Length: 130
Image (tube, rainbow, N blue to C red):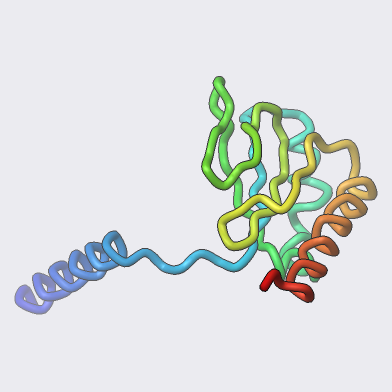
């Protein structure tokens, strides 16, 4: 029994080490939500949209990932410009920003703006650059 426990620990450590060296490939697209603790509009989004998001076409095309925004904002090579406000939703495809939605007022406005971003992504995929 003890030998099998040691083997399991070594196997788990080996798997973790492999994951660190060879990270899983990123999804083709994702919607990154830049948020802050205590942000009323972030909480409203979590209440009104987040429970349904993964079940929608957009949620399947671009799964939601949450990132905390530090005091100085976020600067990243995949971003066209820094993210300062919360919430900010950035649609990223193949490691590059496609577009963003800054702020959240209500679910109707969010879905309309996200639909436009996803439609733009669909057009890019239908007409790839040579």
